[in-house]
Image (tube, rainbow, N blue to C red):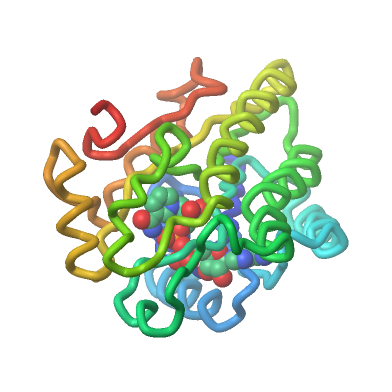
Length: 265
Ligand SMILES: NC(=O)c1ccc[n+]([C@@H]2O[C@H](COP(=O)([O-])OP(=O)(O)OC[C@H]3O[C@@H](n4cnc5c(N)ncnc54)[C@H](O)[C@@H]3O)[C@@H](O)[C@H]2O)c1
């Protein structure tokens, strides 16, 4: 009998978490969804359960809290005794939206950025990746093929163009750049650290997904992308399948940038 392959997606209640999970299910993985938001976690799980009734599990966990991550790891160990794929996808993001304009004149400005917010966002997007990798790397068996994918962003390659946000009187927050560049550093560190332990560690850097954001923002962003459009929500599934399969067996420490060409300009 073929061994079961177990995967885990953080931020599994979110928009891309659902897509990553669906990609993994399509290539035969059991999927564990993890999120801090109970409602969206259940919603995504129920959507996927319709087609894959016995292959979805979900756990509410805050990836920035070491005690919660440790407890989750012991539950997964008890239930499956291993993990093959970890997708570190959870992050706090700012969505450009017109209704922010009236509320706050200088949203996300660096000069007024609080240390509290800096710590909070880094604790999810960066420390969360550290904690999850620490506890789930231990559950990866040396005699099986294992994969960690850290979800970064086209903003792991370039700086945000703040002109995209000026009509909304806001900025892309500094934390996003620091987190997404940091995730690449962690990816390379772990790829080298665990190379002999049969764990490949790569980053996937998506460009922006169209999700009915502010119209002017979308128009400005399109002009920055050689392909002239934002991504469709399911356009990263192929990359997830590739990075989790043997087709990428000689690939580790890489940052796979999928961005309609935005970062080549
Ligand atoms: N959507 C895009 O256009 C885009 C582009 C490039 C990169 N990304 C990256 O892709 C990833 C997913 O983005 P998305 O658009 O699906 O975002 P999303 O907001 O829909 O999903 C993120 C999920 O993370 C969860 N989360 C937040 N804090 C958490 C915590 N402490 N513990 C556990 N879960 C927590 C949220 O509840 C949410 O469900 C993020 O890392 C994001 O930076 C997104």
